[in-house]
Image 1 (cartoon, rainbow, N blue to C red):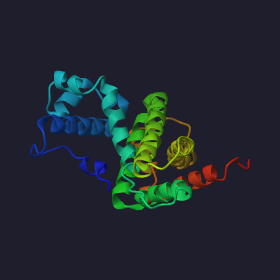
Image 2: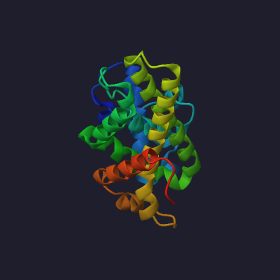
Image 3: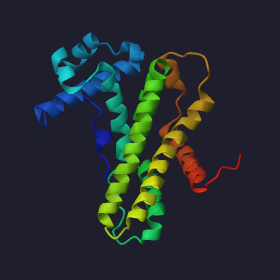
Image 4: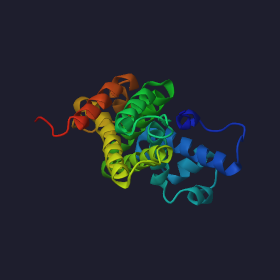
Length: 229
């Protein structure tokens, strides 16, 4: 199941623990500010006002103001590779393909498309002011996603040898990175070199449904091995 992208709005009734609700409100407020005005719009005083919390509360939850937006990026990506529920009776030789197919199925679900949409819009708003930081964080997140997926599969298939585990982990890490490259592919073609405002960027972002074929393309390139350049 996938559900982490379904709580993008700020809490209204305080359900759940107070700390969890407060954290969600801060993340949602940070996302709103970035989508409106890019990273330059993510200022502490504005975040405190928008989230309805104190400055001390913000930094009790996050190390920096930028970390609020980067954490949101992570929340959109991670569900795409977690809880894939690969059947325990899947033959070992078919595990890489089974995981890949599960990811593609996940991407095409309403919740998966919601995650993709949230990610590309927030990433596009962050990129003009913090492209290098964003890229580094996305790569680290994708690498962690591949490792997490591998751990989940290994737990369901304890018969895997150490060598098989290493090969699977390498494949799934590369698969997660390929997902990132697939998401970047249409942006590289569509977005011009000149600087755009967050609203101008938003107007040029393709629908999530149009992103999935690019991810499939990236997966195919990886599965093909050495590229035909």
